[in-house]
Image (cartoon, rainbow, N blue to C red; front, top):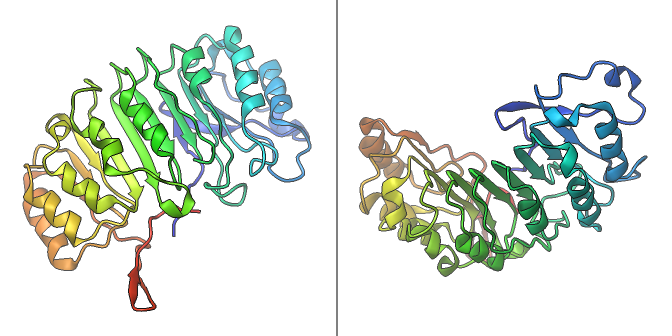
Length: 320
């Protein structure tokens, strides 16, 4: 199994960790406010300060009128506590963040909090409260609420989970996002609360909504074969530039259907890494798509099969 890692960039900017409360030298060497994406974190365990306190230090030390991207890292007891106070602090700071264009909530690695242990909440107020955002992302599916929303500027939406609530998927599909170019959903597994079915993503595949969509990622799913099979005839594919079906339980069944469906040779890239495809089918993908100039990722990574009690077990890349 793989793990979610810290973001390295946001809004095209390198992520920089705002120093902790005892790092005086770090506070003396802060970059320009608009040169980085600022990760503001507390500690999950035995925190010296609460996240809103760390954010208060940040707003006092940095020219927030120039800040373009904020990454919310760990907060105290994230396995028990949701981000309600964090969301409130961000919303209170809106007048001081006129240049903010990217926001990510819950950038934690497994040592801080496993992805399926992160307690999330209703992110609707952030999406409504920052109408100038162009990128928004969230990690963690436990108690995650994404209501249907309208956003005229949002170009990128990323939701990373080990198990995404079906209602969140349906509500994303029902949202009015005319500028959305990049959609990346980690659907996860039923073992960690992911109850999404194919019917929940079908409105996205139909292509009737999201008129600007050029990148679609429906990945990290234990229904990857069903998704790949539906993608073989999905109207949305014709206007995509890149397609990502990686990190899930994709076998020859779904791979054969995908390759035998509508042409994929118009794509700039197709990402299928962490897959359970057999060598002959992988070669067919290469013969058909790489020869047409499609950048293809077929790296199996850690996609190892286990046999137990007469059954073959396969796993998504990021679960717990």
